[in-house]
Image 1 (cartoon, helix red, strand yellow):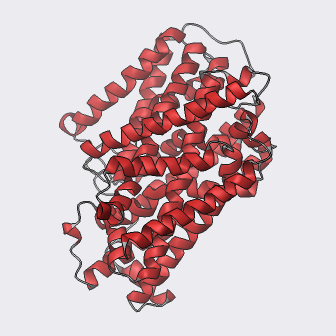
Image 2 (cartoon, helix red, strand yellow; image 1 turned 180 degrees about the horizontal axis):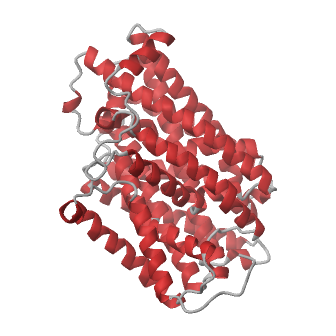
Length: 492
């Protein structure tokens, strides 16, 4: 498939999103619409659209690529994700709705204090910027290799172009627009992965039953790993616990996905959204793992040297764009583009919301249609776009791991203190030494880094995604040790 065809497809897809954005934002472009969609979102649209946001280009490319090394072991992590989503629906969402929050970090101010609140908001800004940048990076390197290298376009310009396209259709309508565009993009994402399985199976001369048997009987289908608890990162307990706490942190304590839940009228609708989303999320990850197994089976049958690829993340695009015919290639680009835009547009909106509410205090302004406030919001939106460009360029220079591993490892360091802060607020009645909280939330990740770096040497233990549990626990203990007195309020 030629770069010109792929670029034409990308621009056509973008034009569709701009059209959707125009119709969803033409009657309302104030801050209330941008931040929480005037609390009028339909739960089924949010549930469906969240699938695209949660899966992202990383799931689309990196999870299938990682099958060659970790088999279906990632599904252990997904099972933990499912438990984490249930905890969010039954524990965190009732709290957020009871307190009528716009930014979920205002809970920390009411329960722990001003410094805790600002620290939590900063942690989110750092965590979401890094995570979303890593996700966009993965897709950008695919676009660079298969489209923009043909015209000698520098990588930084590819990143700027992607973010410019996203900014154009999100800067006005915000969350109200994104709920609709994410629904549309999730349709494309699901269609893409299902059709990918069909086309790869067809190229292997397999019917539905044959495809199932081929995946089941392959060397990649092992799900549960119970061997060598101390030395293996793939052990079920490590993956499962990591999945629970990473989900609680990256979804339940993250303004991005919670912002969509808070845009619904009632807690019941928000909970229906989370339960529905959980079921579909688990099934879709089975599909992506199956795509990975089929890709490796295809590569073996057709003599494709997977070891020659720079990273396993390149396997899916390599086969889809260079070895299958034009239709599977277009389907791949459709899913990849949908996953990328759905994740990044949502992140930019959440980052803008958090900064405007938590640091510029837009929620305390009476006139949400004030042009000055709207212009400030636009500038914040642009500022985070440029920040993501910088993070991506730094990540490109230093990364040598699978992007999916990099994302969850980074989350262990950055989201861990949020887990500790919220756990302390919800599980204890103690007050914190509020001025010490920023220092505690710096010390804890640093201690985790030292422990993680030397865990094999000191304890013979290989740290995996459960790093976030350790980080949250250290934060919790430091908050407890430095805490001053009990809290008398009962509304939290």
